[in-house]
Structure formats: structure tokens, C-alpha cells
Length: 139
Image (cartoon, rainbow, N blue to C red; front, side, top):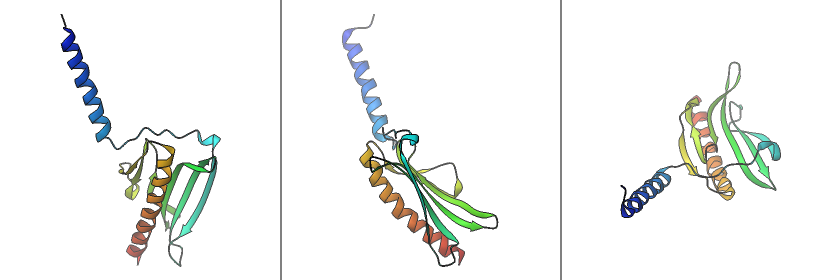
């Protein structure tokens, strides 16, 4: 027979464990709206005179505010543009897929739509730095 005090302690331990897991996770609670309901925009920015390294921006906005994005650092290869690194904001956090790998490094946790704008600014600055590094490796 489980006593009332034991039930309360068990519920408290469970709640504490869930809170610790939530706090230690880099994934936030933000879920973007359907892309079909959003305005999509895409543009490219070159990072050298020969246009061998560029950054492709893919932005989805709703009511004038960014709700989702993907930023792709690309290098010109023999068969066209190759994706080198990708920043995106899936799974409740903005993260970097470096060197074409499936694993990712978290950059910013997303809990609200306002967090997407902050993450976009950070990812944009970081992608510019990464594009310059990739460009300089080519020289």
C-alpha cells in the first residue's frame, strides 16, 4: 500500500527530474507555423570576387516576422554548388550542421517567435565568418 506522503515525494521527484531534463536540453518549445502559410524568400550573397564561396539564405516569414530559416554556406565545385555547412532552426533550436554532417552544434534555443529573429541574426553573422574561413582555405 502506497502512503500519501510517498505519492507526494514520488510526484515531486518526477517533476524535479522533468524540470532538470528540460533545463539541460538545448531544444526549446517553439514550433514554426506551416511553411505553406508563410511568405518564402531566398537570396544569395557571394563572399569573394571570383564567386567561389557564397551563402544562400532561405527565410519564411508570417506577418512580416521571421518564423523559420535555413542558411547554407556553399562552395563552387566541379558539378556546381556544393553545400558545405547549414544553419537551420528545426527541433526547437538553431543549430549548425558543419562540413555536411548530420550531427549538429546548437547555437540558440527557440521558445518563442521572437527567439527566431535573434537566432537568425546570430546564424547570419556566424555564417559570414564561416564563409570567409572557407574562402581563405581555398587560397
